[in-house]
Length: 484
Length: 84
Picture (cartoon, chains in turn purple, cyan):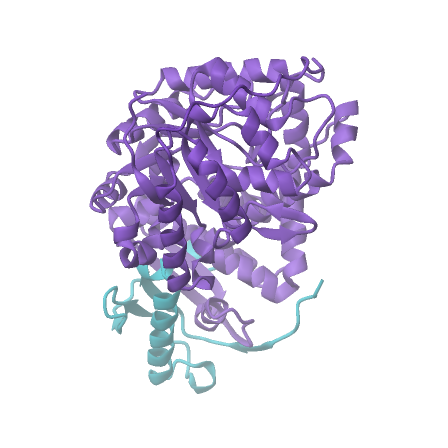
């Protein structure tokens, strides 16, 4: 396949612009999550591509890779046609030479309808799982104008005796679907550290000539697990492993460093630069003349047929979001310590969507009743509400939950109404008035400063919120958030 | 879990409306500065409850998007359903 050699890159978020500017000459390519450019259309339930953000990206004048996070291709449910159409449009708008997506699943269809797990979950690694994933990859590929690479995912569950080894599963899917591989070395290394297949065995099992792109990242230790948290620099140990692996990848076209912007304040700019320089040395070790992958180790015997991929996905997803599920598989998975990590990931992400959208409300609850009370309310909410891909929807669903539950928190109705009014005005540009039975100035100032209001004056007050956001500011509120 | 603590309460008699551009409301740092400016002008105009005279008509304070300065405006009446 004739793909361009791109070089060293960074997963791009607007908040990473300071390091991009500081290290412009060391960044050959930017990788963008297309879904970060999708916005909820104000007049329909559909999604639109934010042309303002798209143009801002173009102005960075770098090649861009589209790295999708919302249409995983490791499960039995094919990507929705609208999502696929949006992905294709975005990839073309970005002139992305290929598109990558995760070999995971997050869409569930069961008796409660279609819903999402809120986290990219590991697929069923059996022959039937391979067939389901191959069908998903082919369906996604068919809707794209450029080639597709599957990303090797993180899996916090323990290895199972009835599944194919991780590397073999990826190899079978990539060959069956005739697609590329995005080798996320940090994911595979994290899996190794957490007790799954050793990285060396994994590399020996995958078709290395199909690896077009490598991801590296930093992580951290948590409750006995190594998390794929994108929380800092690549560890020296992983860099050393990468130094040995990269020369074996004859078709490598890009090495991308992944960092979540929220960790940026903890990182020295000089360390970031040193990291990029190290990745350039790694890139220089690629060997386009190296021979194709030597014969791989003989493959495992066909794995167990049960549980089916559909049952696996339904069970694991329901467990991940605390939906009731009773089956021998559910009993097995409940005993897996990795399930608690998955649940924690889902909950932390859902909680963060609420806290940063309903900012003053969540502060009020924590300051008046304590952080544990907010966690208790969120836990109750999560039991009855499936995760939403948009932070806005997650937050507004929680707001409805609070209105129904009426927990005792002084000034909650007013502050919640205020938070919701800010969102509403930003989205539709219509003025809103929020009545307060107490002086909102000391109340909101205290919450804004993160402290409990000490003195409140009762009376008749009103805040009138007037629309003045420019389009890009308003639309940023309705962007999609996906954890992976 | 912590239960809600009691706090000092006073009673204000002047209805007050603050008009705030939503761009300021969305930016926590500017939001804080704007509310501080409103609080200062409210204090200057003797609308704090312990210095307040008999019931007066509604006062409206408007925050400027760019400068965050506050000006007093002529307020219309509060809508009945919002002033109860």
